[in-house]
Image (cartoon, rainbow, N blue to C red; front, side, top):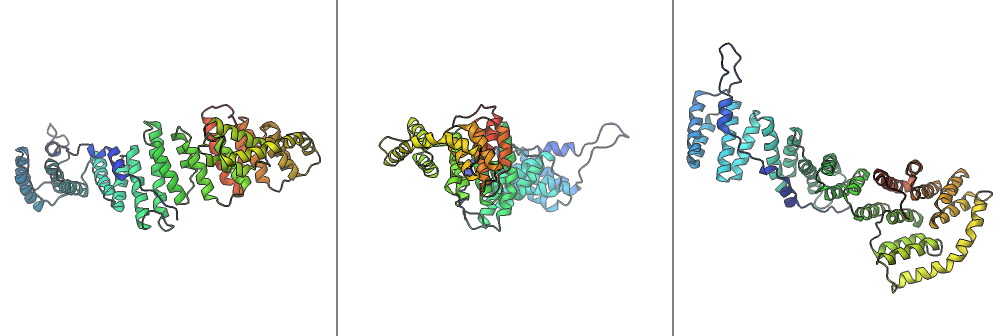
Length: 446
């Protein structure tokens, strides 16, 4: 079972700021507003609170002590008022003043009690519902009481408290509950639906942050990508968000490696499709990336591609002349290059004519490796019409050649036809097309 890293909850709550929203809504004002009548006789009266004389007297004593900053007396008198509170309005006012005293005394338990009383009365205003539910939900989340957090944060969002951080908190409540119920740091199949139900909230949070400050988008999108993979939910939405949020090349490295990890049965040819994307996206960040690429391509099978790759690695300062592996790979590729290049023209002529689909596809791939993209696109298409056994490979060669030429829409259509084991690779390349087309980019250097 895939391990899930715990999000730094303290940091997340520090970002929220919703607990900083004033909970000190004026009780005196609410009391007066809802008990006074409108001016002229014969006019409709404003909604009145249902307050008994006994409660009015008890509550007035609380207000007097509160106004004098005598919070010990206010709390004692409040207990007397609470004992006679029967109507929803009386319970609402009791809860509100319990909150106020709790704030003055810096007593979180008292604050929580007051908020819960006010909410339970059913008389809280829309603004209060947002603030109160957020307050309870955040505190529960901080204490890892995920079910309670989910309950109140859902109510807050439904009441309209749907800023990016609020949505993220609700998502985290889902994830935390699923992880806890699964026994720790992973999500099992039984609890995966709980976590998956949080993903739409996280998606909204990332999209909202991308449209605003972009401060947390990358870390949140990465979190969604991890959870989507862990719950076997389509991760392409969060892969796309991560690629949009991360201005560097680390996101491509993360996404490509994740697809490789989820598809350990990839052949070297299939893995080459992934590595070609990583290279085109600029995500080759370590010597191990270059080594993996070379092992998938084959120094003798695709010498020109390997030579160009090693030169790029040296220019980037990632590959050194003294590295034995790359030194040997370069020697092998250099030795095979002459014959490889010399035989290509004849192979192209044969592929346009009598050559089999298998030979035609191999030639198309060789042209792709040699950066002859237009001819590679053409021959890959011919291989398909000749009934290539590995049609998906032919479509991938054709699509990659199209992308390298900046022909994004034709490439998108080609990739739509890729099925089977290469389908995740086709999705990756489609994400790259979305990114490049969205940026209005020209053909990438490859």
